[in-house]
Length: 264
Ligand SMILES: [Zn+2]
Image 1: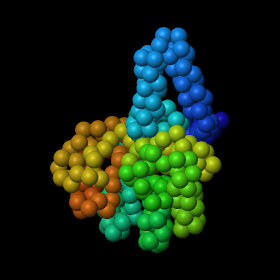
Image 2: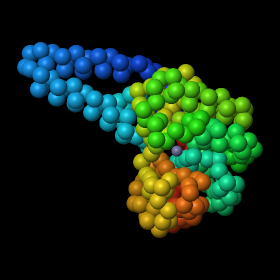
Image 3: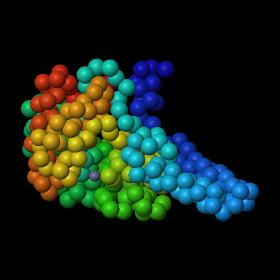
Image 4: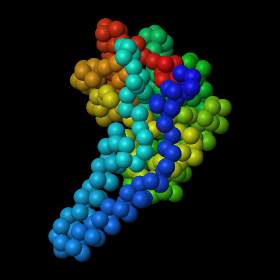
């Protein structure tokens, strides 16, 4: 096996058994029924509650592998990190591309397909400038993504993949769940589209918090070899560019490069 094959197998892991969770759910519910029948309703109900809590945890925790593989960091020892920018394209994308060029940094942009379709040149420009694009849903339903049923979930992921492919001529290989929450229905459309899910190991909550100093120092505290850094563009607070610039400067001071997993 060649090295790129080994790497793509360890890093780019498309779900192979997207319905395995159904057997887990059946086994746990059957277990709860047995406990109920054998020891009474109180322990039975406690088991049922624990089962549902486990599934909720598997959905809400972005790094959870309960429902399928997820990449949380790159397995490298050198001082390099993967910068990922969610929620674009936006009015800030062009300035962000210039900022990344000035720092000779490459990033992966997890695009919302409806936003990419509204600014059709930007997705192509991102690729032309040497960055990557990923699938971050069609419409970014952030309040309800975690609770979408199988049909709406598949529509969000499939449509986004088709739109981004049409716009750029390239099908994304990476997927990031909206707000990081991937429920059991995410894996089937990922398998269908050959997508691998990516979470992160460093974030400063820059999607909602606007104080660059605090956000940058939080991210910098989590910089490690192979870290996957979660960043955003176009947030209403208007400070995403300042935050990303702060992160790039802190990386330079500490001798960190920005790399893409494709270039490992
Ligand atoms: Zn997002």
